[in-house]
Amino acid sequence: MKLYTYANSSAAYRVRIALNLKGLKPEQVFVSLIKNGGEQHKPEYRAINPQEQVPTLDVNGHLIGQSLAIIEYLDETYPTPQLLPTYPLAKARVRQLALAVACDIHPVNNLSVRQFLKSEMKHSDAEINVWYEHFIHRGFKPIEALLANSNETGKYCHGDEVTLADLCLVPQVYNARRYKISLDAYPTIVRIDAALRALKAFADAAPEKQPDAA
Amino acid sequence: MKLYTYANSSAAYRVRIALNLKGLKPEQVFVSLIKNGGEQHKPEYRAINPQEQVPTLDVNGHLIGQSLAIIEYLDETYPTPQLLPTYPLAKARVRQLALAVACDIHPVNNLSVRQFLKSEMKHSDAEINVWYEHFIHRGFKPIEALLANSNETGKYCHGDEVTLADLCLVPQVYNARRYKISLDAYPTIVRIDAALRALKAFADAAPEKQPDAA
Image (cartoon, rainbow over all chains, first blue to last red; front, side, top):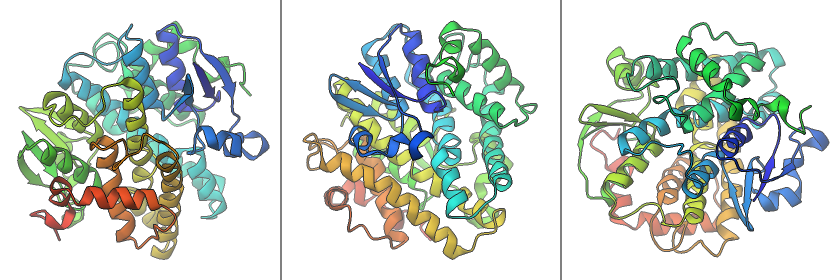
């Protein structure tokens, strides 16, 4: 297995946590989203991932893009520890929480969207920060409600075992902190994030711990 | 089972296709995203889905939000016909294609983002159309490549059986056509979309066929 990755990509961060939890250490290929106008846009990388995004997992020449597809693949093929609960309704809750981050926060605030806001929509950095903050709050407010109002929430997002939802939450909280966005309104998110970051698999996956950290 | 839905929601459209394929007919509750300032924002609905989005599936009081979480739940509990292939690498390809729509096109062009571009970022309808078109092309170009360059693509996105990827593709093509965006560069997407729309489960799920169609 080979992972195409970038330290500051929060989608790659999710996959790094999954790999650490499962004790997998694939070869890493670093794709800088910043250097040289973005190495993800080079034709060689576009052939690996036409979406020009990281991460991509290469499994004996089979190329998997999209972090959640990669994590579900890893969970099916390396089932210990399991990152999705057994029962369908519990799985649905975990996937709902994961997708609330992966669909409704991350893509709207992603690098390529911010670049388009700047270059094509002619927004200043200050205006883009307003955008970023708006979509963090729009996303975290309902996630806080889903977590705080459910007795299925435990030490982590779903009970006391790490799940896919946790793998999405921590990198998104990391991004919010990077943008100095107040998390005061989200005590449950903050509590769960702290409990997760205390785990070695999460700590070792942090952007600043990666060989390609800026 | 009870489905909270809206005719023009493309996330609800995905779930309607899944329900039709599996021969399920839950009670439908219509939540207009347009009327009365958006019924999804009412406190009664926010209690059902804190993300203030449709669809939501109510399974004996268990509320599932996020269309992909709902569809995976339905596929696990009503497995005929199966919407994901059996083998992990094939599943990963189907999920990658589904997420390329569900993460990277749909949320960036969604109603609430367009509303924010207008009200807060002060863009004209013409500028918002440029935005919309940009993110359709940014999304469809790599999906066309993934489909056209793989011998795993068949009559549909993955072989000759309908999968989760198809359920995401058709509503997104529908949206592109609604915005009169040229699909000339995407012959594989257009071919697969036409083959899928010929199926009764897809045809019956179209927005204009719903009881709450405008």
